Structures are given as structure tokens and as C-alpha cells.
Image (cartoon, rainbow, N blue to C red; front, side, top):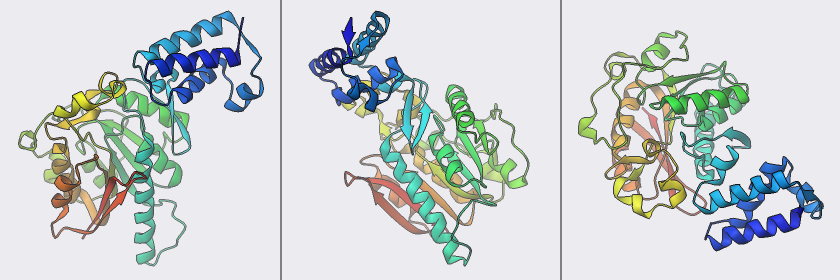
Length: 332
């Protein structure tokens, strides 16, 4: 029989030898997952024995992590905004840096309400919000939790991602307020939101797909861009922003195991921003907000796209590492 102390020590050693980042945390999380216990319990019961079946399962997971599989794929979950999300290889793993996007969106909404002389307690009443490229649904669901009266549309071009996001919406009891749509960017949602109609949880089957490698010249105006009146109060997005040539520089956990469609924004990495900003300009209400996550080096390419009279109060927020992480703007 193996005790907790011995299993954890061996797991940490194997991951360290495999040059896994945060090897101690990874071993802990995998052991917690196998045993169904919390960290306090395992460290207060170091001599508790692990059954042979659990030990076998734990060391098999350690081997898979050592080979490069992300811990989140092995446990099937990741925490974001204090909430636990299901994570699969079909969606981008939520990162702590993306929480800055939630913070900026909420702060800008509060400032807008104060400027309009409305109450400071923001519930989202009357607000229509769009999360573009929702993936696991973490942004849409976090906003739904913070703004319990808002109506939220969460879109993704990947049907598999929409399925994961729907399950996460149900897990956090917000499915009645989030409409998950399989479509490209804002296609398939804006004309329905503008009309005030209910949106069923089905994809916009005929929306022209925009692959992550497409350049702006390959993107054509959508039906909604051409015809829908302004209707959205807030558009938030963490779009694909890695350039294809950067693939070789990515950690193997990212390069080999996370979905390419959620990683790569084109050859340069910032191609999707132009179409997203164009659609947002057409469909945000006056005073509506656009909040976008940035790649580590995409600010110089993205910021000029907001240097137009239609945008005002453009601001950039750095993450904890000092990297420009979020850019926000308000429609005039």
C-alpha cells in the first residue's frame, strides 16, 4: 500500500524530472482529483493509505501529465472567477489573465451608469451583452453571475465548444439568461437581439465561417452587419490572437493539446480584431462598450483600429506581469 505522503512525493519527483511547470501544484491537483479530497485533508492525513486502484490511477495521470497533457484536461476542470468550469480539449483553458477582462467590463459599466445618473447597484437590468468566441463559456457565465438581470449571447464557431459552454451554463444555473449560439463572431445573433426576440439555443447554420487563419481580406460583411440596428450594450471577447509562426514557441501543453481554432488569429495573430471591431461599431448602442483581451504583443496592431471618431474613452489595462492585456472603448 502507498500512503499519501509517498504518492505525492513520487508524483512531484516524476513531474519535476519531466520539466513540468508548477510540478508540485500539478501533482497535488491530480491526487485531489483521484481521491476526491481537498488540500487541507491530504496534508492533515499524510500517512493515510491509498488503495491500489487509486494509486494506479494517480500514477497513470502523472505519466500523462509528464508527457505534456494539461492538468485541466486530466481533471476535466478549471477555476475561473471563483467558479469551477468543465474543460475539455475542445475549448481554450480559462486563464487568470482573462479575469482582467471581466473586471474592466464591470468597471466600465458602473462608470457609465454613474455618468448617466443611475443607481450604483448594477444588476444588468435591461442590458444586452455579447461574449464572442465563448469557448468554455467562462466570460459569459461570470458576467451572468455578476449581472443577474442581463441578457447574454455567447457565440462560438465551434459546435463542440458550444456544447461545453451549455453544460457550464447549466452547472452554474444561468442557462435561462444565456443564449449559446454556434456562429461566426456576431453573425446570427444581432438581428435577433435588435428585434427583441427570443433566441433558441441553435447555431446560425448558414453563417459563413471565419477560420482562425483567415486574413481580413477574406472576411465578408455579415447579414447582421449590413442590416441590424444597434442593439448591444456590451461586447466582450477573448479572440484567438497567436500568430501561426509563433506555434513553435508555445509550451507543448498549449501547442499540442488546446484547439487551434481558439489559439491562432492568423499569420500575424491579430487579424480577427479588425472584423470584430467593425461589427461592434455597427451594432453597439451609442455609449455601448467594447472590451477585448489582447495578446502579449498585439496592442500596436489593435489600438489603431480604435483611432476613429466612432470610438471614445479608449483605455488599456495591464495584467499583473505588466503586459497590456485588455483594451476597452466606448461607442460615441
